Image (cartoon, rainbow, N blue to C red; front, side, top):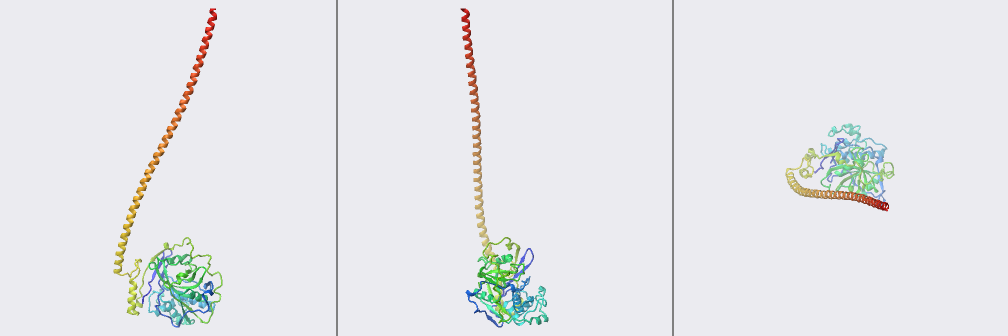
Length: 455
């Protein structure tokens, strides 16, 4: 049987490590006494525009460094049923569910499990409290004690229903008051939900090369106005919107990305639909977030995370599987995307082919980049020379203008000097004329006087 790969994501700031891939495919297996969900209660046009089961959910837990997302999602559903039926619910032992689910699969390693196996545990054994069997990561492969099994029998899940990956069916199940577990294929863009819980639809460029792996979560509501499901994660209340995220309809109704939807019921004739449509403080605040709006500041989590892709192989499970299934798993392991260089299971032949292709592509890209760089350099140099010439021309023009101004100033000064000289010359001539006139007048007077004397 081919199993999904396990990958990890580490936060550089906090050091917290999150595991992906804990949801394993059932490959057609069904839990005992399971049914196909169908609802005669609602037609598609009769469904309420919003359903929110969060007021009846218990606190969001953190799966920490274990691949126990399936057990966490089923524990959340189990606690919800207990709270709705009895008015209160304690913490259900996630490790009890996780250990026994893997025991059904003959697996002793921390490699995740199937949702159907977890449902089978709740049907046959029930679940004890975490006070009886704590969530101790060091005890992940330790079988619970007799006291844990004795306490677990007090509350068994009576039936399980498989939900079709169809919008009307999914909304109808929630409108009846039942959350459902699911396996969702995650991509790098899912990390953007860390701040506000808003999950974007995977970009086509991500699909097939930027996968985190498969992850199990619990769907607890929906909003037609936001066109999104309300989904409970298992990474603690500091993640997303108090531990929840909002996944677009188009993402979760795509069977390539969302698989194996299951709802569990404690009492088949108990009506849990009452009150789940009521607006309250816990309801989705459509006015607060917009799936298609601009991202707020500080939502870029790429810089805060380092991706450590590690693939785990469950040896105990492989021994119990048939040869064909083992070969299928090996083939699946060999086809891990070459983009993840950290993968330890890549075959030598694939690595050589990938290396040659990458080398050729890199060489061609490098040559193209070099040519573009040279052309760019020539363009820059040409532009620089033109700039220098233009600068020289401008400088020459400026000098010419300054020289012309100096000449004009000099000409004006010379004209002023000539004008002053002319004025002085005219004054001198005028004075000389006056002097001559005076002399002539004096001579005439002298002659007249002389004539008088002779007479």
